Amino acid sequence: MFIDEVEIEVVAGKGGDGCVSFRREKYIPKGGPNGGDGGRGGDVVVEATTNLSTLLDYRYRKKNKAEDGKPGGSNNKTGADGENLVLKVPCGTLVYDADTGSLLGDLVAEGDRVVVARGGRGGKGNARFATPTRQAPTFAQPGRVGERRRVRFELKLIAEVGLVGLPNAGKSTLISRISSARPKIASYPFTTLVPNLGVVNLGGYRHCVVADIPGIVDGAHEGVGLGIRFLKHIERTKVLLLLVDVSGMEHRSVDALNTLLREINSYGHGLSEKRRLLVATKMDAADEEELKALREEAMHREMDMVEISAVTGQGIETLLGKIREMLDES
Image (tube, rainbow, N blue to C red; front, side):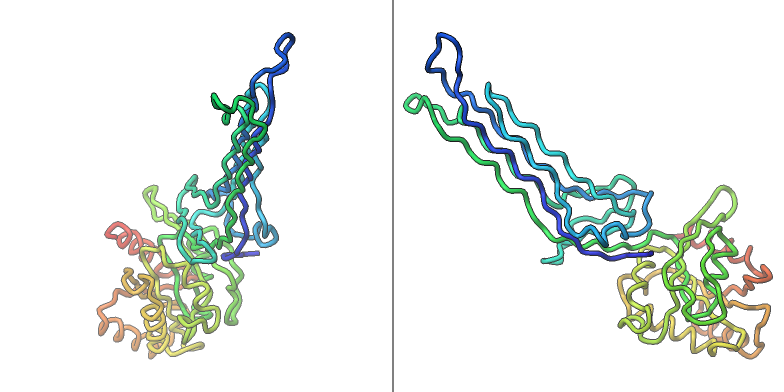
């Protein structure tokens, strides 16, 4: 199950209590205080890993607590610090304070980490409170409580190229053709219900990651259809491929292109500034009038256009070459 947003509670460890203790040795009936300090409570740390692709693990782990520090001991022994709790999340996860909305960390690469709750400080033992006028303190300091916070994880996939198109525009067929990704493919809208990632060989030991998101419909930037929930997954891309079906079976090609451009520009978050390539799909069943109209619209908008058929392979090599060229330029 693909889960890309979840809210959890994190609790750092409590510091260990300081110890009240006095030396008790033979022939020393009134030894001084020797109570040790408590250990520090463990922190809660969020760390990115490439071994995960979803936030599903946290859907049912709503409360996550680090280990408490151990209390101090006699003979000035300091208690052990509590173990940090490390929460693993997929690369590309943003970590927010759920109450304030402030961004705590953007974990992009393997090993990126952020401390979201700090452990409490250990309490001081009674040896710390001895003075010339108070040589036998009978009290110690309790450990401090660790921080408690509600955090929200939001996953934004990391891909260099994003496939954008209306439902049934051929995005899943294309990504299955150019990569080893195997999304569900069928001839009805919204076959793709979750984003798919595929690694594409561009030749010459050059690869890129391509993201296929569910189909965009009119009003997607406001949440219509699957819209805004998945548009965020192409925010990190460098190039957008705008896939338009020219078979004449689903939508008018020019209307489809206008819908895509309108939704991308309205969504914001930098999508309107990304490099774009218009891709005419289903050339094996192309309607000549639709294809001609799309070509004219591309010339009018001064957009580069590649014509492909993911079924027959027509134009695929040209498309991959253009992707590589655009990535190199960006």
